Amino acid sequence: MTDLTLTARRTIKASPEQVYTAWLDPRVIAKYMTMGPDMQARDVRNDPRVGGRFFFNMVGERENAHQGTYTELTPYSRIVFTWETPWSAPGSVVDLTLTPVPGGTEVVLTHVKFASEQSRDGHLKGWTGILERLDGMLARTQPA
Image (cartoon, rainbow, N blue to C red; front, side, top):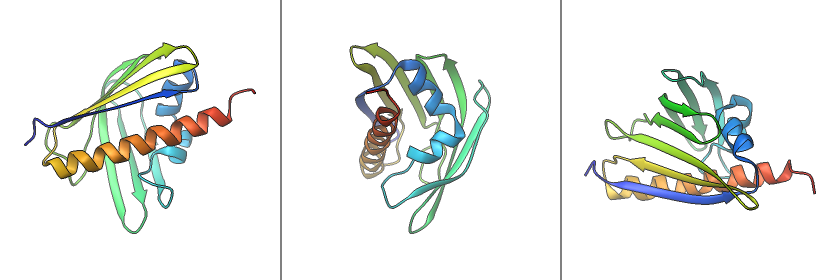
């Protein structure tokens, strides 16, 4: 079932530069990179360069380690990285595309390779929530 793919889209009320920077800054990642409000991202480490690695734990009822390697970083428009968790299919990759639109940035997140439809559906829910939290966080930092 590794050919399964998901796509999450959201218009975020911030510039592509702000979204790109937020996605790569470990202090900011810790604020939005969770599957729900009852979780926290801890131990966030990031080396935002092609070949660089990231790591964080999503902590709620249990601790879930997430890590990966950046394979493409195009400032303010694209971030591509491997996605490695205990539940990831080998070769799982996330491609984040940022496009300026009126009122902000259209974010299209495509995640490929899942072990099952259940895993894909759970990741879609998680990524959708992450994009919502990122949007809310960045919207609060914008001038009125």
